[in-house]
Amino acid sequence: MAKYLLLRPREKASTSLQRFQQAGFSVEALALIETIPNNSEMAELVTYLRQNSTPSTVIVTSTVAASMLVDSTIADHHHFIAVGQSTGTVLKGAFSNVIWPDQQTSEGIIGYLKSTLSVPLSIVLVKGDGGRDLLPKFLQQNFANFVEFNIYQRNNISIDLQQLTWKTEDIECIIATSSQQMHRAFELFDHAWLTGQEWIVVSPRAKQQAIDLGIKSVTCSEGASDQQLIDTLTANRGDM
Image (tube, rainbow, N blue to C red; front, side):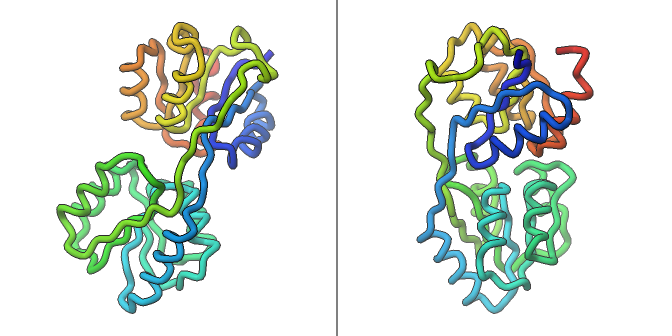
């Protein structure tokens, strides 16, 4: 019987499922959202960076955005700030100047920018459509030369619950790698079942949202990478 239900975007679900199973966990993966590239916005980003002879500080907020940048023709003379280690590792596949904050969240990026001694001449924020407005608001208020590119969008996936290969009574813990997926689950499944489950989320903000939804038991992982989530499961194996 499945013990864990992993909510991952469609493009990551199968790979994550394999890694969790290799680590010895009985897991079912369910994709509730998918990411769709915005090719026109991506082309505008490439043109902007190509025309800007002065190196820009490029802030990248997800592995999806990082992968799209790596596959592009952007030159390797810009400075990249990743939201976390997973995003930074992807960026290092094509770019040499990549860092990420110790606190791997938008708040961590803001803290880093506040503490740095040199003020970037140009800041470019690369993200998906929607999401939190904390970082864009901070950048807009504090940097004159700031531009934002939303190079993909997140769409909900239609789910036929009758076609699921697992039963809700087999699940003892739900792992949500984004707040959007958690909220999407509440659109699809019985609320009493959801709130009665153990949950693992990937940020303090997501944990508070889970509590606000009525979830009674929530553990916060250090991040959203497969290894970070596996480490969290391993550390809490006896409690779930």
